[in-house]
Length: 530
Image (tube, rainbow, N blue to C red; front, side, top):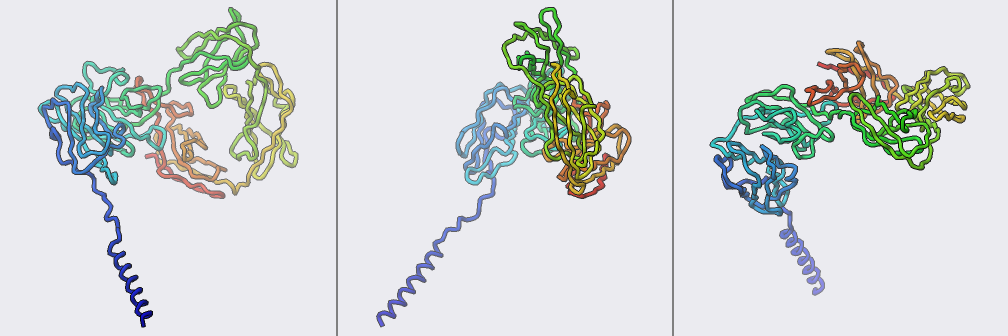
């Protein structure tokens, strides 16, 4: 009997322990999703005749500031940024003004998403503190949409600005002075609103800059309205961001090899003219592009000299440099294939030469298929990029042998190539896809039609002067974005704009969404440009 009682007693003790554990378990409660609440401010929000140097914002819970240097937008901009305290969590945020405020001006502090509660990080979204140094608050507003002129994805944190048109305004103002009003797209906004504006005439500008609110063409993107706008205005304006092409400028060349200099530049390097002189003697020379760099290569015939004079000309630009000579290794002719393995059915076979070529003999180049059949081809040399192109009709599931005999190519230093042999092959047609684009509502011709990859890199391009049906045959399966460019000046490239010339970019239109191109696939894609 005692043993049985002990069993029951043990069981009862276990049940009581479980019951107590259940009653005492911690669930954590409901997650806090409520944003902080502003209880009061001193001076009050939307105060007039403001003369103070300090503002206090009192919240109902502890808050912290996150990325305030990016999120906080002060309009008009202040030369000396205010100090925002404290740096740790607090129920009171203090703004200490370090600048001299303009008279009769409405100021706004838009904190964006920077004010969060300390525990869960719930933001007090787009909180604005507004005051006026005059007797009333300016209340007009303007809506602006920002997009990229060329790319489908638009940069974030783009500033949208209004410059007041008055007796002090000129075209150089945006380079030297901050705007009258400013807002920002932050990290997600497509349409922004400039608020607390006064009536007047303004220049509307968007800048993707380094945060100093001044336009630097070397690093910044810009978008602008060509005509001044008047406030009030209920139009939703659209600004397209672009990077200007800088005027050509050359930097002092440096000796890179025995008979080659490297010269950095701004702007476009093609068609740059260079003269190399040793005293009064002109040394034969030519200019090519350094691959993947904003540098030109200046090739010159071997010469004994302590220094050389280099004269650089392009358009209206002209300057002289003195380059000191030193012992250096000579470049030698070396030609390599740009392809290894597969050659795309749409592509041209190409070779790159380390030294620039000055002549080639097509009769010393041969192309044969795998059954030794001779394949006819055309040859073209791009002297600026040092590339030799061989174009021929390619059959699917075929292999080709390309032989370049000695003396087929001669470089600038009168050196000839040795025997070169390359092998390439093609894939089956079923490994590729065909895409037919049918354009509708075309305004003008010619057009550049492009397929880009997920990174915006152009993979395929076609040019049309009248046709509205564009065929992209034998393209690699992938996801593509389709766009057209109205080539107004008929130079077959997209042209950017210029603020000083008041010139906008050439228009680009994207097909919404992506085209998922699959192997062994034929697709007809309508594309309305309306």
